[in-house]
Image (cartoon, rainbow, N blue to C red; front, top):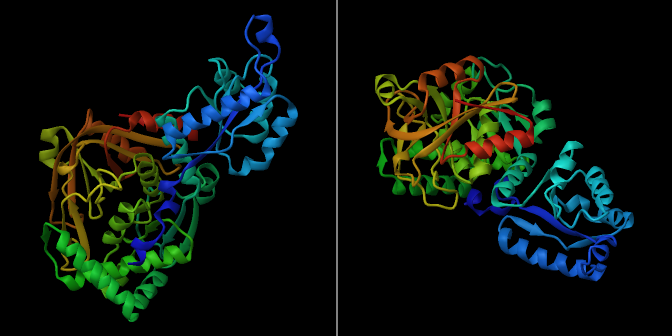
Length: 455
């Protein structure tokens, strides 16, 4: 199948960091202190040893470049050759008279510096507005990877030229999103998407691929409440989305599926993009409904940070049952299938029609079967300057009969206050990931320059 055969290593969620170890040759201070002085050759050996240890500790997510030695301004100049391939510098021995070279390195190349050989270097660099951290641990690797992945994200935006609805609280300044987060956007029309679906239906091989994918999904489901032909319609739309994303060099998607022109096309073709959204997200490709760019940014951050599928849906108070549990509710028709991890098995799922229609494949995933039923819930505001967060415990995961087929209830510290705050300044679509990622998101906010509001 085309979508399964692509090189997943090229997806932003799987990006690696490039780290260059640097060892600074000290001046004559060691001799004055009675220490054994270090030669350039000694420092090169130390760099090789450091590279080996870094590779052992972080090799799955970090590519370790050839170590280098810093003894003069000329050594700093020489780093220009591979600066375009370097994401960060790991530095040892930055004191002992060589600090000006390290400051010059940080200013000239604008890369994060890690370590330094003493506790004073990161505060010094940060006081100059430069990025530095004391140690390279798994948490920092995850944050830097997430930032890099965002910069590699190109979103396909499918929307009508005559906007009649959709998500009113969506982020709207695309230039600002690209400037601050690195995400680029490619806008196409609804008609272009459904024309591509027509191409899928007309081509024997791709049409067979869609039918085979539908059959595989049906065989793997614990419940199926719609006809196979309607599942096939949804897999045809999925393959159309997949083909357009590849053609436009995109790796993320949002669809204005609630705008009037799009609804007309859905009625005509007897399908919705819900299944496509679920299938993209389980591959680690961010996707959101209703043209909601605030949600798409949140989905991207959560997938890249956790390497898990996520569930984006409408935030509510959960009705009487939710209030009894002290819970918020999230409801939609496109939950993630791999909530335990992108490389983990799918959770048990069912296939249902969208809302009151007999068509439009909507997925229900039993989130209570996740290994970790703790959950983090988040959304960016329309300016993408603030992220509203809460965390809690999943207490219910049920199929419902109205348009949004799945409802998840999550017990949180202040359900009513969270919903009110969300609907006042943030919007209605929130993203759920299994696990507690609050601290990482707070650190990411500091790194990327957005505020985090924890309720």
